[in-house]
Every structure is written in C-alpha cells, then in structure tokens.
Image (tube, rainbow, N blue to C red; front, side, top):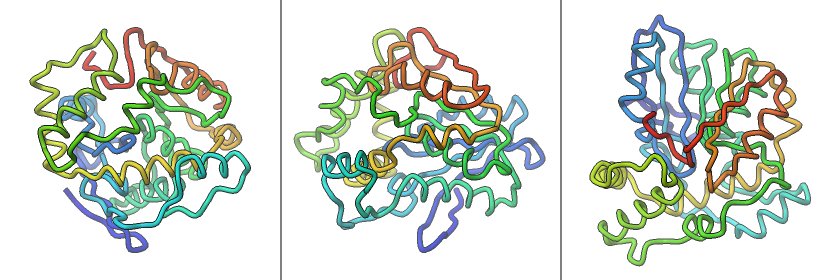
Amino acid sequence: MTTLRRDGVEICYEDMGDPAAPPMLLIMGLGMQLTAWPESFCDALVRRGFRVIRLDNRDAGLSTHFHGAKTPGLLQTAISARLGRPPRLPYTLQDMAADAVAVLDALGLAKAHVVGASMGGMIAQIVAANHPARTLSLVSIMSSSGNPWLKPPRRDILRLLLSRPPDGRDPEAVVAHMMRFFRAIGGPVYRRDEAELRARMIRAIARTYDPAGVRRQLLAIIASGDRRPLLRRINAPTLVIHGAIDPLLRPDAGGDTARNIRGAHLQIVDGMGHDLPEP
C-alpha cells in the first residue's frame, strides 16, 4: 500500500502488475474499501495484461477520514440539491474524482482505463467528463446518472442502508448487520458462501469501520445531483454494466447512464444484484 497527500488529504492506493502494461484504475463504491475489489478479480485483470490500481476513497479504508466534520441532514441536502443550491459539505464527488486523478499523477501515468462500481461509477464518470485526456476508456458498473426521476431504491433496501447495527461497539453485531445488508442487495441468484461473506466482513471491519464516513460519502452523492449534462461531455469509449435485479440502483439507472453517454454500450447481467458476483 502507498499513500499520497493532496490538499491535506491522504489517499491510500495499491498498484499491481507490469508497470509497462496499460493502467486500469478501480474506484469502489459507498463505504467500500479498495479491498472490496476481489483479489482474484484484480489478479485476473493483471493476467489479461493490465496494470491494476485500486484506491481507498476519502472516508474509507486507510485514506483520510473527516471525523467530526459538521454536516447537514440527508433531507436538507436532497432538497438543496434539487433546487440547485447544494449545502456546504466536507467534500463532493468532484473532490473524490480529483483524488483519483491525483493517484494517476503520483504514479506518473498520463492516462488510464477508469472503472467504477456504484458510487465509484459516479466518480469515474466525473473523471471521464472532466479529464478526457486522462481517460482511455470508462466502465460504469451498477451506477447511475443522478437523474432525479429514476425509480428509487426498494424501500426495504433503503431502510437497511440507512440503519445501524444495534450495538456499533460489538463486532459480532456489526458483522451480522453488514452481512444482512450485502445479502439483501446482492439478490437471490448469485449467493455468496456464508463463511466467505462473514470472513470478508470481518477483514473489512478490522481494516476500518466508520459509519459516519459512509454518511458523509452519501451526502456527497446526494449533493452531486443530476449528472446527465456532465455525461453528455464524455467522449471516451464507454461500457455500462448493470444487474438485472439490482434493488438499490435499479436497472433503469444503468440504462439512463448509457443513454446519456455518446456511443456507450449497455450490458445488463441476468441475475446480478448490487454486487460483483464471481461469474
């Protein structure tokens, strides 16, 4: 693991593969750490001939956490964003996109294939729109355009997303809560092995656990508003991947993303929820 410092913020990242290979930057989603990109997946990309770089977004993993930062409420942020007057936040998705570009700078890379999942897809979209010369291609996975008229998450999934474990100081309660959430968003088709999922949650919590950081990232998502005008500026070759049964960001979110990026290809994956199933 390596850390860079940008404007007082430390960003942790990992670089693997042949330094001379085409670089691929992987950006993870809400509350997720770089380790959420499975090792087997990263290794497969390296074997395919890519230099794979994955990072911890701010407020996740080993990057800077904005502990104690004052933030508005979720509803206030949503209303302000709809009115075009987003409130002052510790950071925005634009800042997180700049962090991703700073990783490329730290590695001396002029450009990369940019891949993002969920919130990471939103960040990747901003990178591709604002830094076209740095973007070889864009892959937006289980993400969204920010179109306010899209179908919202399923109510039970939204409740789980916004809920907390009964005792945040009890590791067992936290693991059980996280397993319940990931089983729900992943859907019934590609079920993760329970022991593997539990081990994954334990490793994630041991590395870092910051529910307040997840909330700050969620505020950044809400405040980013409708990104369709920004998406129309993207000229990189683009693939949009979305699960056919995603209950958090519905399949229409992927379709709307693809419709607003010139020449984008949409790949709907049968049986895929809001997760990266091994197949």
